[in-house]
Amino acid sequence: SASPGQATRSPSSPSPAGTPSPPRATPRSCAAAPTRSSPKPRKDEPTIIWRWLAGFGRFWYEFLIGDDWTIAATVAAALTATWTLHLAGHDAWWLLPLAVVIEVGLSLRSD
Image 1 (spheres, one colour):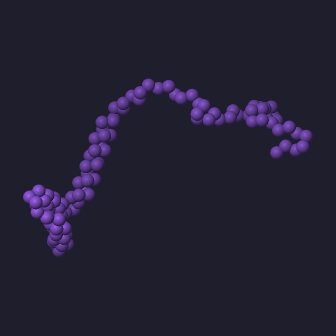
Image 2: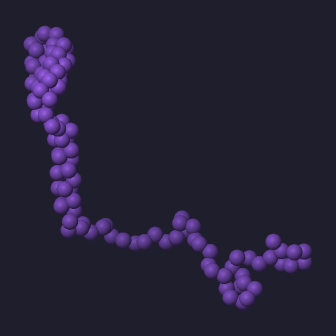
């Protein structure tokens, strides 16, 4: 703050030592946008995509199949049987929970 009788200097005026102060930053909206054509595709893009797809597939395989493939097979068979019974006009809502309870019980028993 300036004492009475002293003028305050603006940010762009020279400093007391006579050197100019650094320029003020320009807001982003005023800055010139870089002029670029469309980005060039990188040579390794297909590799990145294939690596991502392989990782995605590995995740779902490990998540669904995991350590015990018999549970996944039982659930798949129970879903198919439930759907088939439903298409035939039967109430089959009970089949999937029953199959899961039986298979989990068998899986825990065998461990």
